[in-house]
Amino acid sequence: AQAAYETMFSILPSVGAGVNFMLHAAGWLEGGLVSSPEKLVMDADQLAMVHIMQGGVDLSEHGQAMDAIREVGPGGHFFGVQHTQDRFRDAFYKPMISDWRNYESWQEGGSPTAVTKTTELAKTWLEAYRTPAIDETAHEELKAFVQRRVSEGGVATDF
Image 1 (cartoon, rainbow, N blue to C red):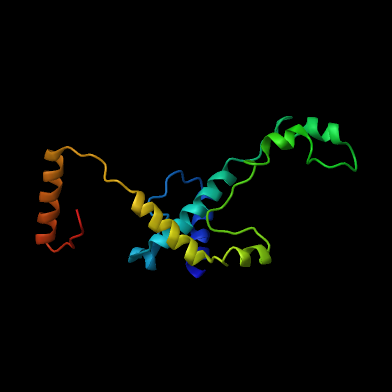
Image 2: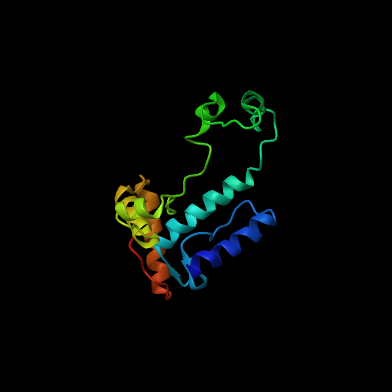
C-alpha cells in the first residue's frame, strides 16, 4: 500500500507539470533498486486511470448527455434512456486491481486481494509473452555487448 501511494504521489505532480513520457513509472521499488511484477501491474493500472483523467471532460452537448437530460426531465431516471444504454458498458474505467463488488459478493468470489490479483495478472502476462523476432546479426552484436559490459563489472541477466 505504501509503495502504491508513493507512486501515485510521484505520478500526479509529474502529469500535472505536463510530462508526456515517464520512463520509470511502473514496477520500481526502493528508488529503482528493486522491481516487482506485481507492482508493475498495480502501477500500470494507476497510470491507465491517470491517462483517462488527463483526457478531460467532454463539455459538448453530446458529451454532457443534454438530449438524455431533456428526455428524462426532473425526477426521472436515466437507466432506460438510449444514451445510457449505448454507453454504460464502457463509460467508466474498469480497474484491473480494484474490486467494486459489495463485501458479500467479494467474499463469495474468493476474497481476492491486490496481492493475489496482481500476482495472477503478472503470471498470465509473463506466460503470454513471446520474444519478438530479431535479426541474428543484431542479436549476436547485443550478446557481445552484454558480455563486454559484464567483463567490465556489469551484472548479467538472461539475454
